[in-house]
Length: 249
Length: 307
Image (cartoon, rainbow over all chains, first blue to last red; front, side, top):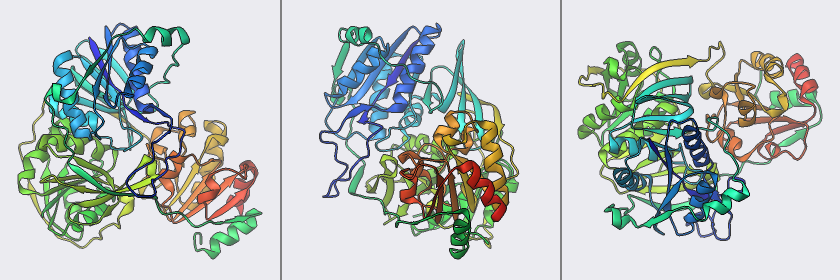
């Protein structure tokens, strides 16, 4: 079984994004970019499935600018076998990403697509579910455990009520949550080896997908700032303050 | 503009999140209908929400566990009669709504926190570090809505309840089981008071010994930072933050939580925030209304005694 792993190049997880003064978006100029953390977990899970013998090949795919090749090289250095970049400088919305991935799935015929549950830039949490709908596949979202047996996969999902387990017929989509695994670091020899692994570049037009946006961002602004509070010196003061504010009886 | 709201429930009881989504739907200006994938008893509760014109109930076994593969085609089939579909931004809503959007070939708007116009909405991006105002050009709207951003519609309605059939098993997925955490405490996302603990609580036993008495005293739900959940102090369903639950209680007490961006994203809309931390430079103090620098292992028991 082949596993397809979509990865996205996003602002580094440790950085605090700054809203541009003109309100057109978030300033990404000269900002460190990395692989979306949920996608790192997806790459790791695919590699573990391969190491366990449940998968034979791991193919990473990214949709984005030429620089997204760096993100794909990271996936290759972690251990993915080859990579595909669908190159575009346009903002691609989740629905269009799902359509591009649908076209890649038609070419590659994977048995599973494992991807992050959301990207930490637009926080949409849509692409996996949309891809599953377009393909008519089952979806195991927010996964904290993935168990492949024969032609089905059991996915334990982190849901509001606790942990839910569903069984999906393969092929299927799995989207990863935080506690699925801890992604490995790429070793230096593997980083060197990744440079010679195959990386194919395509364009959305090659795949016949219309990526015209459906949403228009009118403005991006800073969130409202909370007013500075007070520091108290003792538990007595804390209790008195809370009573004064009416926060406790 | 008629809107269809997906009801959130546990198979017996309607979640109050549904009431908040009804408020958001009413802001679109047209009639509001609610879809219950579950038993008649839940539909009867939904019918009492003020402002709801009609409740549709799909009692088929195929949708009883909210499997997206079966719920989404049912919703997509109903959308001929609707202009908008709104689901709460819960794990159920987030699982189902994008699947509906793709079936309808429209772009979803996620975690909507404000209705600015019939097609214009605000939503947080970058873990709440920025707020985007977004306009849809699609013929139909599909939204997930953050329940804490809207007032809960009251009771007093008497909507008609109508059965909808035809929900079929797509044969793609099956429900195996739910490992639900049992608790006598209020539900985290709707609780009036939340006490949360962080990494500083050391281990699962210490977490319970320190946090539980304070939560009991305040009648609070228990939350946790991602670090505390990752370290196994408490289950994932208690995580407050960007990728956990979003809460906005009247009182939020953060104990031993440093205040990482992704945690703040989940609680900064709380009315009063109290922070207890031994590090005076912890970022949590920047959003706290009342802060106390001190050792939580002495401060918290003292607080329990004095409240």
